[in-house]
Length: 310
Length: 326
Image 1 (cartoon, each protein chain N blue to C red):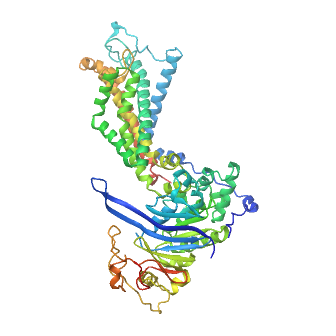
Image 2: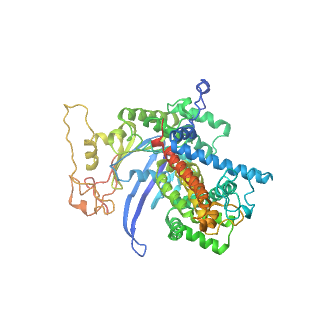
């Protein structure tokens, strides 16, 4: 007996002019839920403002135009320690630089380091975690024990050791901060993949002839992406904080460039005589970290289909 | 008798559960142990047995989710066990599977149209321009409408999802479909619909089924021949009518007596087996069923019975029938 092939398509059936529904947008559903969360919207708004400030400052610098009230790196010793007033909104520091301008200028460094460091650790962490989770066995053991070794050392200590070995600077700070949070992403991704891998649809993907790389890309990662997005958003706030910590220790961005942590570190001797030199950079750090945390929490709820509002 | 499509010879799958410090296995679970049978082109072979007897493992070996510990699988005359991974993948499109749980077998992040299109695209069965047409055709085949193509699995009911799973399996024009308890997760009213759909599709596309189920009632509807498994071994194989009319193995008799009877006036003798299924890690010596058998003979605990043909096409592994040549 010969197998009957699937009969030629019934054209009439297909031409029965039925409309095809548009796919329901998953982003849209996520946004609808996120909008309900007031705190997350506030976080998103603040982040939007910060990004706007950073981009404007960066662009104006690139075009050689001054958009800030004062040159953030211009020091005028005759005007050092001016208390906040109408001309210097946040006052001036020990070198007579305008703090308001410096804080706005610092936004771009903090955001850039935060995003770049997370991008680095996310890329490496997701790849390592995906391989470990999917392959399992010895590969998994080797990768995860390596990650455990990195986790055993406090991350800021590891970053300091790294900076000590390779020198100071913005690029090294990004690298150090990115490096120390790789294990976190690797662990989260591995854990989620282990859970998703057990689903029948992953086995089905194998049966229809998918190669492993495509199974990870098309069937596993889309189902763990929500965990990664939430973690990355929260990770930016940690990275911003780490940048400030390195700056405070004098290991991050080097003067004269404005960086919030560095400003805090250099002004700490004047906490009693000129507290505003610490308060304003501190507030800037707090607001940024808070905004990313609020958004991250909101995203976690929005990406969880169980809590999604229909 | 028509052509044999799939022939399994002494197939076994052992899972190592624990190893000692030298890496020598100390606990081995024999999920499938020395199983041989063949499936004829165009038939529906029902495989029944209680939970944990190895029937799903057997199905997963056939679709290459597990590789067998030993034994041979001949598919259309070709031995699949000697192929490397890349060669084996070429046979993927000939052997497909329908899963038990329709809620877990569809990727929640893909539209059902994309789920059905994927096997066609990755196996390059059709030029890109024709894929869409084919997807709509397959949707129609399983009783879904064209306008549902862009919906996500969570927008469907269990029965509809199972239809999507069936369409996905059909997409590559397979020769054999392993149905792994395809209706046991569905409501009884939907079970009949899906079974009828499978029946219709078999007639239309000339499919061959390996139909796995845990009860004989579902299998009765769809199978031509039935195999009964117990603790990793096949204990009886017979054509459907023969098996239901004349079950020989005591285990089959017990399974049959467990099917509920619709007519309340009709009293049926119910065989209730004593005890639990022994652990497959440490199965009884001799016949695996002897610890629960109500017709146990002396030799049952000593040596394992072999599968023998006691009536035309009726095979049974039991000492009650014929002497053992050990």
